[in-house]
Length: 508
Image (cartoon, rainbow, N blue to C red; front, side, top):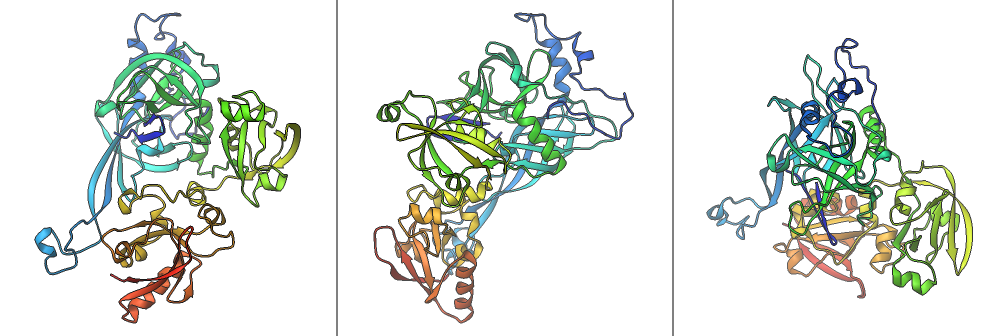
């Protein structure tokens, strides 16, 4: 689960119908929501008198998922590395670890034990590492789970559990048939309370939450969804899985009647690919966009809520090659209107890379159509490197995804975390696109680098008079300095709006 309120978000941790060759005898097991089984248990048309029979039929295929994690935490002992360090719980500096757990939900999609859940349910925060994943069935039996595949962009993951006998399972339905006002039930593990069932209606279809994700398109429901419901199924009244519970909108952290589920039409094809071990390729144009707000639309003399505004175009990417420009307004992509419910990001991400498509846009009041060959979307890590906010919080110094790019040498020896300097980041920091170096993303306040005033957004151009073009270059220079017995490394630092300067940083 994820909360969404204003611009704040936090994780709420706590296919199409599949025809499978499972190795079990034909006819030995049918889906819990097979139509032959459902006829006798589905509620009558209209307002149901009870959900009990429907729940009893479907609940055996819904599972609880827990993880055991090892999370790194910074050692805040002010005397670490000195003779007085033992007086404060250990003399060694650097990060320490603690054990953590998470809880979520999932559902079995095949008799041989494939399980679907959310990616964030089985992924550790920051520098944490998942040591084990356990799936617990409604009868209380625990199964060690193997991670088959996960996809951060869609927040989906597939696990595998095993036993000699078949598992009860359910199938995906067609979420495109869902209508506002239809009854739904959600089964999951809120707050660790396994086997909890809630009911409600579909409040909206194709809801855009404004997260900017390539898959920011959800079924909205008022069925109670809380911490721990992440990854659980949303069923329609025919017993089909039409959504995977994923997020809530809440000012309090609890359910206020606005929950979101990933539609089955999005989830099923991705689950199929994850299960088969296939790469998930998505379309990409290489533009920075924003919705056509009322003020922006008024300034352009256009109706609002139709189209999206291009703020910047990345050099060398598909949009630039096709001739798109900053200031263009994209109104239609491959014959599909760009609207708040069908965003440019969503349409392009769900277009096969390499496909040639028409893009209709407005430029200086003139409507024109250009032909574009859709590129391949970079990984989430690569996208994170392309988008760098020098004013963002440093996450306590260490622990974010960007920090993981820097390697342990810089953290342990200099007390800094860094990422490579890309042309996109160089532009954001006011440096030339041909600038070479690495960008500091976090600084340990207790290190000499922190004492010398190094900060997030500083570019390291050289170390000991040797130009730095990569993380590996800087690490090699630091190792060499330590091997030669040097107590400090001389860094040349470029800060936005200031001339480059040399700063000696002591090695620890």
